[in-house]
Image 1 (cartoon, one colour):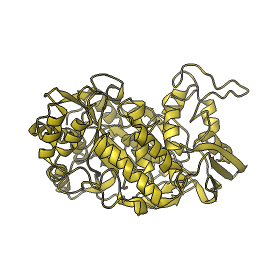
Image 2: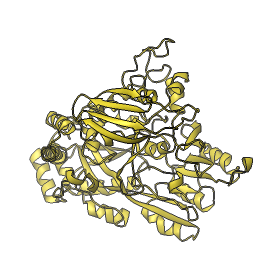
Image 3: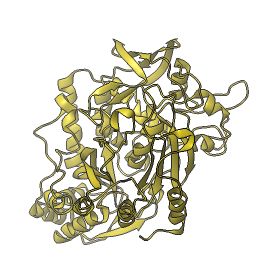
Length: 534
């Protein structure tokens, strides 16, 4: 097993510990979980860490007011709010659970909810209290001001947000500027995690806070070593009952083979992001199994419409018609996932456009569009990280060959981090990406391609009609009109002025010890609550 010196030292410090906890006679196990990455931003604050890998770990230490049955039917469930009711189209009242405690021992109150959605953490960071805790110095690191990404992320997640009203210590009201039929679902996003106001105030800097945020989850953060390990331990005062695991360690092991070898050797109990071609080999060991399947995430590539070649929508349209998506699913996923109906999921329910499909595989149409656009073979860079997504490089190589077959000159460029990919540069062309849906409505995923979303903030793609449609979707209450607006927005995003190229619905496979009875989620979330463990 080939590991870097840093990963080898981290593993040595972990495997030197006993496999089962013995401190104070605690029989609960300690889990070692190998992942390819813990956090893309090297923080654990959802207002900065908006990634698939961050979604995996956040569920252990932080919780939201509403939740989803990620290991079940995906239905909306009570979270830190035990119930809620609509006051009117703009106002949602929530009753908070009582006897919920933060990891510092404080009882959760409505004041903490208001703080979690307030300017100190989420919006401007410009409030100053009597001790002068909040300042307007360089945001995000040495000060207590949120990083500059936070207001954009907040605006994208809660576009109509106006204020939180405290009714009493166990009751809050969310008031919007405009109606929003999706507000209950929006509160299940990890951006809406409820954190301790006092713990935030006591942190020396925003970065100190972001390395160890104090939430209400079943496990509390003990230590976070960026690019290396995250250690959590059971929070036995958890409102949902005593957690079944004594200690959980996430270890960064980027190489797939190293993760597999570590599982076989007994160094790891769980390993994440397994390619389907590894499943049979892993399960040849009767003590191991692989669980998982399609999740609420779609793999795609993003176009930078300001690139000299890609500024012509016909070239982007040609690229979408040159990709044989079913062939990729068959070759790399053994049919264990599927090509979605564009950027949408079945759990959209009445908002699902069942007659919509991803662009057809049509090489003749791709060639026609390229000829019409006058494409002369100029290179188009394809930027990506190595092994961030399962089967990432293999998928890119297949698509590069398919593009080559219609005359496109696409050059794969490996990058070290997301900053190199999303940073504004005249050399950007297309890049790897994915899109998750946190709740069952199109605005959950489409917000990435509206003002405040990633493509707008990164300067990759904008469209004014699409922006107006997004506003209509977010505030509309007539479901048929919302369906029409959704269809028009997909037409722009996927056919007329392509922003992205849908590849396939993502699937997430986790290899584990067979004797641990644990269900995978229909997302990147890993749930280690007592209800999901035996």
